[in-house]
Structure formats: C-alpha cells, structure tokens
Image (cartoon, rainbow, N blue to C red; front, side, top):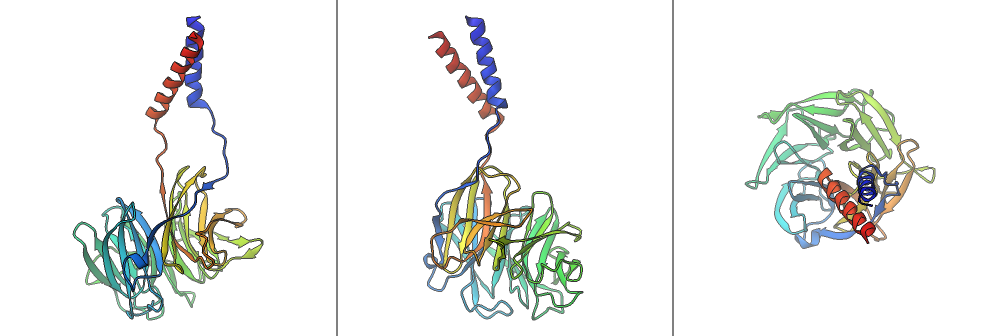
Length: 347
C-alpha cells in the first residue's frame, strides 16, 4: 500500500511540472482610474505619453493649444508612485510627446516639440534636476523628434514629418555630448514603406526590431537596428483602415498591468491583463476609441479596452509584466499535492 502511494505521489508531483495549461483568450479587467490631470493642477490636462520603471509611473500632460513646433505653452511631467500618489512634477516649455526611462541610468528623457525646434530635457529622479540639450544646427522648424528607444548604449529616435526622399525617419543619437546633440540617420523616407508618412511612437519588439507607428497611415513599421526595413502591418477594423494610431506594446508575459492615457478625458487608467500570449501586439487606435489586439498576419484590430467614455481618446501605453511562478513555487506546489494524495490514500 505504501509503495503504490509513493508511486502515485511521485507521478502526481511530476505531473504538476509537465501538465500543459490550455490557452485561453486574453482577459482584461475593468479599467481603474490611476490618475488625472485635474488632481495635479488647474492647467494640467491632455495626458499623452506613459512610461513605467524603477517603481514609478511617469506621465506627460500636454494641454490643448500647446505648440508642438515652438515653445508656446508648457507641458507637465508627473512622477507617480505605483499606487497613483504624486511624487514630483516638472514643468517644461513646449510639447512633451515622447517620454521614456533610460534603463541604464534611470534618467527620464522628455522629448520636446516633435514638429519643429526640438529639444531634449533629461530628468534625474535622484535629485529632481532637469538638464536640457539642443540638437546641432540647423534645427528644423517643421520636423523634429517624437519618441526614443534605448537598446544597451544605443539610442534610437523617431523623426517626424518627412517630405522628401532624403528626410530621415529613424536616427541614432551620438550620446549626450554638449554643446550640441549630434545624430546619424539610419533610415530615410525613400527607404521606408508607403505606410510611414506620419512617424510617431517608437518601440522595440521582443525580437530586437524597432517598431515605428504611423498615426495617419494606421500602420506599424518594423526596422532592424541597422535601419533596414523589415515589414509593415497595416491595421484594419472590419476590413477598413484605422486612423489615429498612437502607441503599441508587445507583451512579454502571461499577465501584467496595462497603463493607458485617455487624452480627451484628462485621465490615466490601469487595467489588469491575464491569459496573454507572448509577442501579442496591442495598440491604441483613435478611430476605434479603444485599445485592442492586432493580428500580426492580417492586421485585423479587435477592440478590447475602453474606459467607457463616449469620446475616449487612447494615447500612450505602458505594460508591466507579472513575474511567472518560479521553480521553487512549482516544487512546493508539487510537494503539497503529493502530501494531499498520500493523506487521501491513507484514509
């Protein structure tokens, strides 16, 4: 009797490691209000970019009427705790459309004026200092830098409003070297697909490709880190091209927390996500008034998340994965199941 019980418990323990969990459709909870511009101040509105790191959530607020090509008006960058408490605020001139944390240093990069006369401000959260940098002349009055991606020591920038074939759409930055920031162009307008007329957000997928969204084209455009074009995904809803594509994320785990900005309603939300498949693509689409799943083969868009507002205007997205159970957790679970089985057989 003891021998059969031992064999059964060992088999059960092994099964706890080898069983395949069936795949289900992704599940999103109800959005929870995380923050609002109104809670920051009377002139703080228009949440745009969202980025998460080092125990904080950062949001840039760009009020309506703030120029994206000069320094008329101001943007407010807010550092929140993970519970939504305001930790620090920073006021920067012009439009802060791109906001990212440099994982190597912890500094927060705020890209100002994406449509002309661009500038970069770097926030040091450890002492709340802000250092501003100017790009090497000539600085365009009708083009500029919209977003940034960090990959090791390399910094990639999306460049907006291409008009001629030689205009850049992707550049690399030669470090924070003063007096002026210098760049190298790795992809031009003529070497890009026809779905990149409106360069906007820049992300890196799970395979090391740069992904540049084109808002007006409703497309995600993939490049290698050398600037070679890889592919484009034109997003459609019910067979029709979408418009107002803003941001995208590529899931890295089975569950996590999604943060998103609703620009029109001056709010930022968080929503739990589970049953996710690694490498799934989610995007915020203005014409669909929602955040949804993008089919990588067909480009078909399936709306999944809205905050319920009639004029919901989704913009910045950030995803934080939930750690998967480690081997130790699985082992403890297997042992507990085995012990339970022994008790059942003994009775």
